[in-house]
Amino acid sequence: MFAPLKGIRVIDLSQVLAGPYATYQMALMGAEVIKIEKPGSGDWARMGGPTTAGAGMSPNYLTQNAAKKSVALDLKTPEAIAALRKMVASADVFVENFKPGVATRLGLGPDVLREINPRLVYCSISAYGQTGPLSPRPAYDHVIQGMCGIMQTTGSPGSGPTKVGAPYIDYATGMNAALAILAALHEVRRTGAGVQVDVAMLDTALSLMASLMTIHLSTGWMPRQNGNEAWSASPSSGAFDTAEGVLMLAANHDQQFVKLCHALVRADLLEDPRWSTGAERSANAAGLRQVLQEIFATRPAAEWELLLAEFDVPAARVRSLDEVLAEEQVQARQLLSPLQVAGYDAPVQVPNLSFTANGTNCPPDTAPSELGADTEAVLAELDLDAATLETLRAAIA
Figure (cartoon, rainbow, N blue to C red):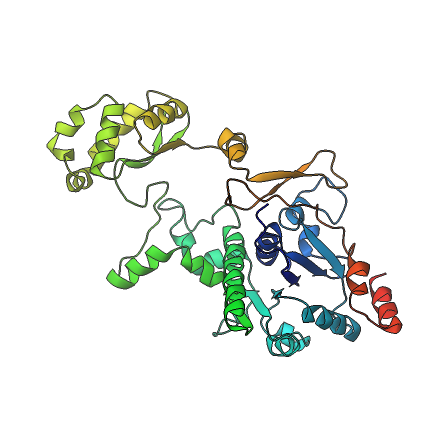
């Protein structure tokens, strides 16, 4: 099995989505991830979202917490902080997503922990980063969506700002953090010195809009709400209503437009001077859109998708989540794995890595742990005195 992080130990103080998704990527690649949770309640995501199981194992939590150990520690007690510092001595990575400054106030700041372990990769994940005037502010995915500008480009003219449906900034931030940690681990191996990684949701969100930023700063152009139209703005791309369903089409350049016309059995469109070149098609976009819309309205989107695929024209019928998950393509890519979780009648499907290695993916090897299930085993490794152990046990009882 592909396990490039086997032997890497991660201490994970993060919760909800971004941080846990970062460490989940690492767990899937073989790292030992020790998740530190608040006694009694644990990660907030344990209780969040719709659930058919008992408290503490919501689908929100299961999504990014398999293959991890759960240790319950009350970080308000000096004994817990002392135990955590001992864990850090044998760790390779430390991840936290407190508001900037909180970890330092707890005695778990990067300077303190790197005195204990000079080779430590210390990763902080926050809304706006550890520096800058907005650094102290808290935020969630939808708040950052408002801040980063994406909502002003989403939706149709007149609809007002529109949020992206999924918490994509949270998950992108998790992937960004995992990438940063992997790079930092390589740097530690190269230099022997620890690395402090600072990952911000706003930074990640803006990086997902890289071309918009560059074009705006270079030309002054401002993006607008563009509905379901293609980023290319080609009149032979974007969304088209069909006899049943919506078709997303991409025929941007001349070669694709030629293939599209042959697929539609409308080679005559190629002889029309209004649409003979990309520039002419853009200049006469409304007329071309009307012709194409009339053609696509004659058949269902599913039929058009298959036909256009035969001519190598990029196109897809707009699907619902249940429809795309039923596609054989999703099964072939090994994107999900079933896990048997207490409280669920059927196995729970959780995500694997979003890539394959040597032709296979990396499923989690264990289901998410019950809150605090691994506390005793992990504490036993720390050689704590009996009084400290008793205090820690009392705090989580």
